[in-house]
Length: 430
Image (tube, rainbow, N blue to C red; front, top):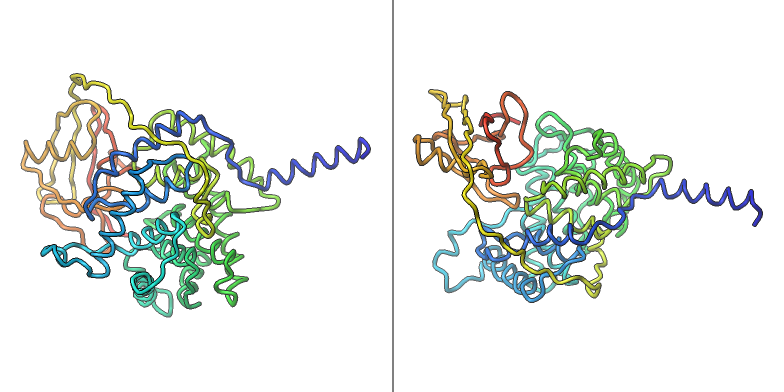
């Protein structure tokens, strides 16, 4: 090859690299510290706290929890079979337990596939049938004119389709069509802005369907919807490099890493996102178990789409529990807690030790000032269901804001208020 030919080959290679999203290796110590944050959660073994995303995240990562990991899957199976299939015979309270949501069931099916298991037999068929019923109910809620809304969210809708797809379970075109229409017509907008997480989850579901050819009659629409999702995510990149925000970036990267987009400078965008993630990791930004579970696969060059054909023999490093440092007396900080959505409006300064979470602030307010609140656990941690006796209604939620109008990106268990900050709890509709 002559000099000119070599130059053209090199330029062509650089152009191809710019169309591929690759995340260069991150310092293993940083990754290990991230993984260590999942370990304490694996000790919470009641159905209320079980989180299949932990198992999925570890199996798609470069890390493992050894026997602890296998035991966690065992407990997942016992609890989900009991709660969904009604197999409990010795627990008189089993029928009173809340059954897993559509999203939890979908993640459980992903966990089984992460262990190279296909659902099968009578029990497996019942799990699949239950998830299909969830999706049919959501389809009816959206309606034939697409003017309705899912009872849960389009995020869970996409997650459900993805979970069935990796198990090679076919869905009716009409079910897939609802998610296609949502992406095509911007109905994945949530709370007045683009939900990068929802778009990314839809894109992952479509990518799985495309790879598996499970809905060939929708093939062209699926391919176009993947491209639409990718383009929307790229347009949502912030000057710092995040897609949407720091916590939606891992799932966005999972989609983009499964992509090839000629002429879109995909590689450059992903390298910028990697730099932003690295800075956030060094600052200790990632505390939420679900987000960590989505990020660990990315740092290993994997995505949920890899569960179509998982590599269960890939070597992974055994995680060791983090060494705890002795707690020291912390200075007190003052946080103003404000709730304008109740009568009379609530406003009180609350003193807590520095480093306390917003949930700690709420507990201290409850202890000292008669403040009341209720929460419900989810895969992302506890979220508010009531404040000062006021329950959320249909399509309502308690929004967390840093006064006057900056929405918090983290939940009550993860956000760490600063001294002098005013935190507002506001009841809003979506």
